[in-house]
Image (tube, rainbow, N blue to C red; front, side):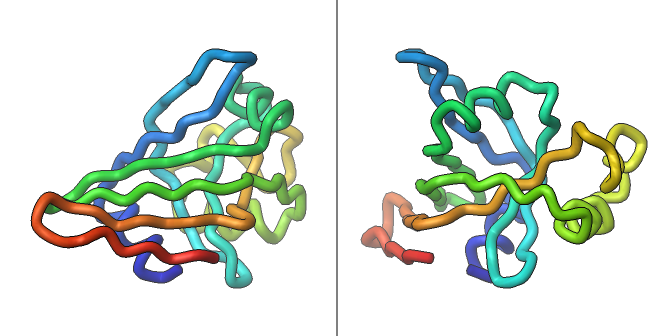
Length: 130
């Protein structure tokens, strides 16, 4: 999982895909952290992505760096604990102007039953499950 997190941080921006009804939705994300052995991302509950994930928690993200790309598929689970929110905000202090670990908007989610596949045009795909 550490390799997955480090790769996504190297990407800087990765893209998260959700669904809204029968319509795919993709948007850029940049937060990723490991907390208590789980891979977390962060958003705001007031955003459409949050509503989409609550209706259908299956999601996929994709990032690209140095001629390689990573796809992570799984179920995103909301963690409302202040400790999880604080961990993410401490890792991304620039978000503290918009979010707080104690507010009702900050949302952190972790991947459950996930599959991560590293791919490139020069190497065979490598898949990890977590």
